[in-house]
Amino acid sequence: MANNYTQFSEMIPCETKEQQEWLPRELAVAVEFDDGERVSACEFEADGKDVWIYSKDSGDLGALADH
Image 1 (tube, rainbow, N blue to C red):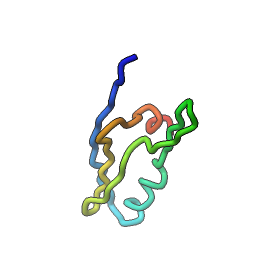
Image 2: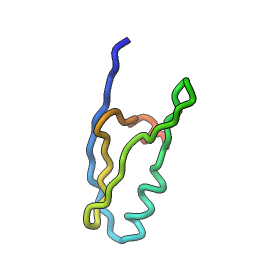
Image 3: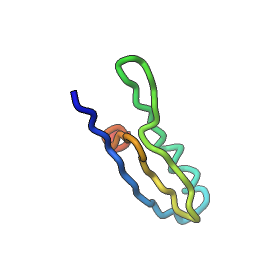
Image 4: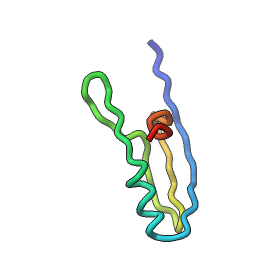
């Protein structure tokens, strides 16, 4: 079976520091594989007032959108 890797990058503007802290907490989703391993669906990084949501290797947009 082929490996299908999903990379993405999105900058989300935040008006306040509270929003910037809330966003990663609210969207922190762990994906569980058949073998029980849990990995994060994406990465988060603060950039000024914005939050950068991205995946360098293999993100799970479905899990992120469902959350």
